[in-house]
Structures are given as structure tokens and as C-alpha cells.
Amino acid sequence: MYKMYSRIVAHDDFDGVVSAALAGYFLEIDSVVFAGPGDITRSAVSTGSGDVVCDLPYPLSCGMWFDHHEANLEEVRLRGIDPDSIPGSHIPAKSCARVIRDYFAEEYEIDPEIEALAAAADRIDSFDYESVEDWRSKTPGAAIDSAIKLRSGTPAERRAFLRHLTARLMDEPLEEVAAGDEVSARARL
Image 1 (spheres, rainbow, N blue to C red):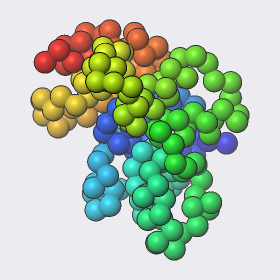
Image 2 (cartoon, rainbow, N blue to C red; image 1 turned 180 degrees about the vertical axis):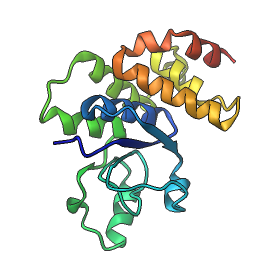
Image 3 (cartoon, rainbow, N blue to C red; image 1 turned 90 degrees about the horizontal axis):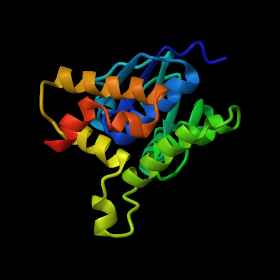
Image 4 (cartoon, helix red, strand yellow; image 1 turned 60 degrees about the horizontal axis):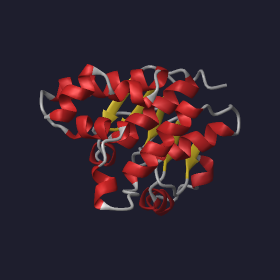
């Protein structure tokens, strides 16, 4: 049913990486491109019917769209598009990862590792912390988020790092990926 999709286009932040990992896991897609919201609104990234777009504004064309931003959903309506006509799921939530997790939970059993990914994305993307100390706590999600936010290296190196994280998160627990040398080195800087 999902074999028609061949690429994921995702936001280049923590929620985007986790969303790409979840969509890739469920849809069995390993080709991922990262972009910012402006890249989509300017059509700087070409998308088509084989693409699954995650955590970004709705592009001119795509096969499936997953998003959690109310403003992006309103923008779709203002363009005269019925959101219900777009395959995927686009509802307000704490994270796009949560939207994807909930969408596929209707068809698949959700294991604890996937639940942990969605929970970490919820916390980080919605800034759902109880205190400054809670925000500063060194969780696996915080380590990966810190490594993603470090803008060292060339753009190509940063994109390669995001693709590497996505591939690892598709197959390994969050804690294991966060403890990896690539994340540890970047998170400490």
C-alpha cells in the first residue's frame, strides 16, 4: 500500500529527524532530504507524488503530508485545499512525531522504542518542561537536539549527520543513538 513513496522530506530539527525516522520505519523508506520551512514555501526543494513531507508546510505537491502546526493547516485552507483530501495526518499536536506515531498506531503495534521517540519529540518541540532544571537535564533527546543545533561543518556535512541520525533512530533505541560518538562529540561542543 505504501510502496509508492520513495523519499521523505523533513524539517531539519529534532522533531523533523524523529518524524523522518518514524515515517521511514513504517513506510520502509531510507531516502531522506532535510529542509527548512522557508525552503518549502519558496519551492526551493522540489517535491512530488513519491514524497512524504514531515513537519513542514504543505508544498505544491507531495504524496503524503504529516504536520502538527495549526498555522500550516490554516494556510492549506486559505489556498483552497481541503486538508481531508491530503493523504497522511495533519492535526495540532505537541510534535509531528506524535502525529506520525498516532497515524500508524491504527495499523501497527507501537513498541516502547517508538513511544520513547514520540515522547522525546513532544517534550522538545513543545518545550514541555516543568522547570529550568528540567529543561537543562541531560536526557538522550536533549543530547541529540543539542548535536542537531550545532551548526558546525559544511551544509553537506550537517545534512549527512541528520541522515545518519535518522537511519540510526529507525533501528536503534534513542538512548543508544544519543550515546554514540557522533552525538557525544557534537553535543559537548
